[in-house]
Length: 394
Image 1 (cartoon, rainbow, N blue to C red):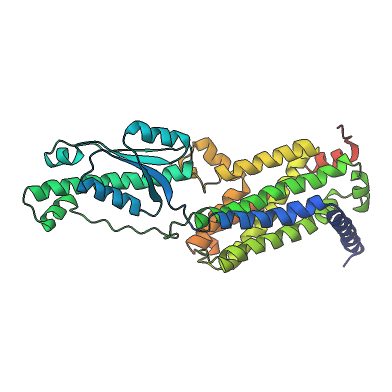
Image 2: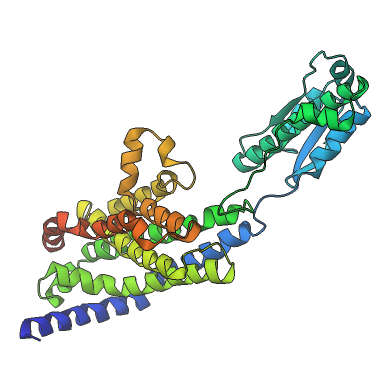
């Protein structure tokens, strides 16, 4: 090993020790790097521990009140997500309860529905949901829509029975083709599996953005940037590596924790094994740190750097594709989604954990995360100049 390499390692070690002293001396780092991620891991997984919301309160307006409509009401109440908590005499009363937030929706069966069905006059049943509450409204819309279709079939079946058809003849007319559906990868339709596998690394990514940007920008604010650079031998590369290395270790440990927690303790689907996901998490940690360096290079003040980091991190949750499919977005947004590390981590998760493909199948996503590590080279001179000459103005 040459003298230069030994000196470089010593300088990195000196900056490393300096950063470790900073981390243990400021409780803010402990909170952002350990306590906040752990809290979010436990909060999101326990909030959705039942998989899907159950027993959502709905109302029923049954003005027909026949054996057929009562059967429809019982079947609706039997759905896992639906709980008929009140019966209302008319539409106005149910709408008032919906507006007050007492129920999330109601099913409306007008008077004469059964009679009109038997006489082939095509009666109408209605259902109303409050979509201001997205998840309850969506789940109840699905259940009530299914129930309206089943109600239509039940009423048509009664009509066929009245005309003398047997049960087998009636069912052959009502449902000539039986559909057998199977949900892939998440057959339980568990919202925790659906959301937490990307939500938890997304929260960690957001914290990495902010901690990285803050830890560099605060050197300028406290006028310690020159000391930091002097300890690194005036090498911005040595300074950044030595400073971020303890961050990388801590955040990587936190990423291992959520992988073990999700796939080992909670037994979420992980068909390719936990190894590829831990490797993807390491790439996400390093890519997020380099994004943080890039952000503080663009805006070398804590206020602007943190604003940029938080904005970019929050947008990641919407544009990465796990809440709304990227392929359904505008072409400009589809292209822009590639600028977010979480998008590529999500693609790796789908390929590795859900589908169980080989790592080679996801090489583009792995390469994209590696490309984020080159971002600091675009602003390295600007950042070094800011560390030397920028004067912080409160």
